[in-house]
Image (cartoon, rainbow, N blue to C red; front, side, top):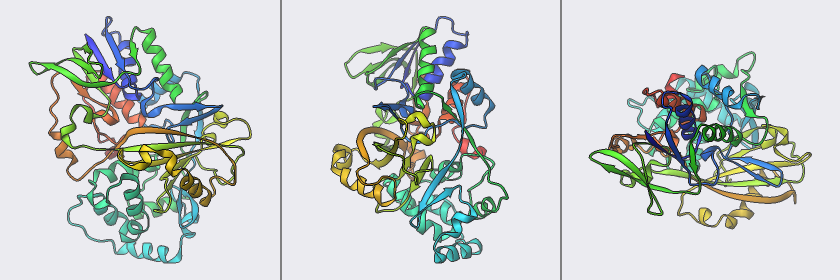
Length: 438
């Protein structure tokens, strides 16, 4: 069967590798189309002058035994286990995330008092429809106003009142990573803070290169099994006949015949009339001449309106040799729309970026060697209030499968993409609402 997989991210690569490795399709004819010049998708690594920069804080953690086994099969001995250390910057200070009692007690007294009152006086919302409804009903008005509202608007470009409740279901509780820790309510946070010993979460991370090493290993196995890659190639649509897919159309006008298409690229390429939208991320990969002691986290969230970035990642805290010896680096994530001046001309915000980084202590003086700007389009789906209706309006023809974060418009993690691909490769159905399994 002629199979075309559009997108060489984690989902597309896992599908290709598993189909070829299954032995059930000995003569499988698989072509993987990728718009970039290398595999990885949203899990790429940019290597510049001895520095490895991932697209944000990518790492592997899963409670799914099948996914865990697959990760170790692909990585073989090429991985290290690292402990998690993440932070949130609130009220002028770095605080551990998940929150600890010590970090919360350092918040302004008025914030603490109002949050305490919210434990007993959270608003009663009859029907939880929006992200704002969810946060207010679980955490109270105080934390909503103090952190969630501003951060959400800054990150998504959309008011929390206009985001579907699934944005919370997919993101908030899962943001703590480990299923042994809950953050789905103010009471859950309080219980977590009072635990006698914090839960230590372990990650897999490649022992060489960045997170893309995993994707490179997948590519190697796919090519050894007879799969074909076409990089620097843009798929613009599909060709169908009598309600079934017959090929994939490229921007050059070429049509690649296909009896089966797995589309992991943005679904909006195929169905622009759906009105679905994505967030773009502008990365500032910053090399530093010396180590900055305050950057002792792996990643940190910044909700303040006056800061241009929403998250910082410190590569050396994933693996020390992601930077040259004695040096440091920072990955700053700036979310924006494709028609914004920031996206069109990143250099226009360089001075502001440096100023904001200095204000939180992430860089100092003339420590910056270079800034490598990378535009990463379609990084997060935006769950508008009517996104489910928009999704349901899409009716793929026979033989077309929408999958992965971008293809199925699903705010997931890499482990979920792998689990989804493993299920599809076996010909089974899969659940997209993995966050509800917590």
